Image (cartoon, rainbow, N blue to C red; front, side, top):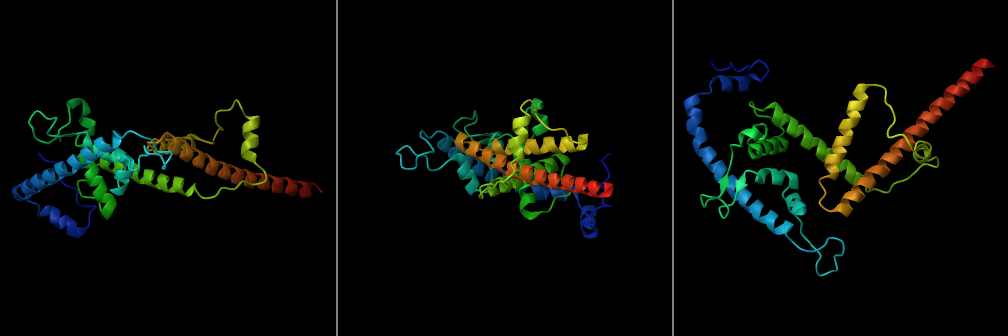
Length: 261
């Protein structure tokens, strides 16, 4: 027996459409759509495959634009032109095999993953659905928790990219560099204790997001610059809040002194 569709939490108009849905009509409608989608997807993945193989096999360097071996175009840059990350493109390409390498002599899109990888089955399809939700802001009725988690992860990564880009703005330091002083006095301390487990878990998530953002860079030098930008911005925050804490404690001491008098 199929599980009854819960329509209590959806808008009335949508609820009516769900109740009128017909199995046979839907199958007839979806068959040609799926064929068209698969054809378009294979064409797209083939072009992505050719682009990746060409761009990642280039010989040269990224530092000196005047040199003859300077690499102008990169795989990550190409993906950026398409408004996607190169990790996303790589995920899309995992189930794809070009016809030159396939046993059938045709481009192959493997939508059914091996049993050992069932938890990431149909990754390319899921990514396509996530991209559509990011574009329209509307979640389909069959939206899954796994897809929502992936959506939230990519949205957070995008926000981190914006934050990291803002770190390229000129930095400044207060006269009192509490951050450097703390490091000098705390060489054996790996971190500073927080108040509770909720704060600690939130901090771990921030560290994870930063790690994911930095791992997106292909060029090691650019990756290092991005890491230093984050460190510099964090240093400013540390000094700002340390100064605020110092002023609060100083004010409390002054108030206590006035009370004694």
